Image (cartoon, rainbow, N blue to C red; front, side):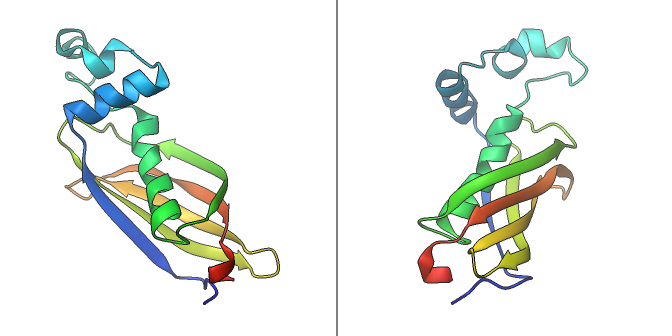
Length: 135
């Protein structure tokens, strides 16, 4: 079934210490603001924050697993980080189709991540090629 404007999907995840440490290891981003509570206490945030790209990766999970789903090819992502994500925050990543070019199977998505209080922590747009099953 082809994608249509307004189609949407979301996933929710609580960000744990293990998530932050695994992302630091995988990415090589060992900035102490993510890993060291004593250092982070001296920053404007007053405590550790998750990597922005860890939060952004939740968008990839929605696109690759839910909408459009398995076989999606992620083309681009623009984003702005609006608020910090702290240890133990519960983040909901949501994508919504805002444009779809059926001949090329290219969809444009509004992408948003919000925390458990409904605060937008990330917003942007993504483009992806939908798998043939969705064309």
